[in-house]
Image (cartoon, rainbow, N blue to C red; front, top):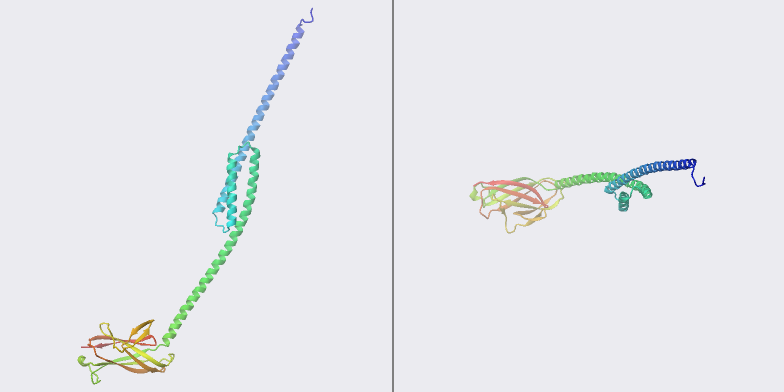
Length: 303
């Protein structure tokens, strides 16, 4: 028998080895499939975790952006702080935009953006502290200003009341020191200076008047002006009738008379010669002295 001839025993051994090798290959293939499946599952879970982390980080950035919007809308009376808030707000918007376009699998950049968020939060805390401090200061100043406004209003009202009281007092003093015609009588005279009641014979008006007692009025020579008004409202004057000052204006008088006044009751008489056409009806007489109106009276002329 030749050495190259294969015995049944050798054939069996070779088949057994091949079966063992094949079995090992199958086992290895199964193991590799299991390992690959496990790795795929872990990778999927990791991607889901990264996606969830990115979503949470996006929500945090959006919340921070909303907070910055709120602080930007506040009436912060500090231009420098307003500018800083605007810069940080834009920074958050830029980071949020970058986060949205960054893939969840880019774990390194996600981690960096997370650190950026923590940094911005610290800045936000400092800004909040400054804003609260400003608000407290503004609130205190507002209360103080309100208090001062109330005080100023009260002082203004008191000054107004004092001014009104002084005005009333001044007017009272002025009135107290003013002359006043307390009695008046008209007598009609004819050409012989005798009393008459006949309309056609009236030649002259005699005006008897009395200035009352007033110890507060300054004594001395006084000029008494009289204005005589016809029933039709026309002022009766003569060429020699003087003018006088009254309430920052000049008025024409009908008659004028110098009297000496010493604070006691003073009687005097004025005469008006009728040179014009005499009209029947009610006449008016007004007296003035020291730039003040000191009396008004009426008398009737019957035809």
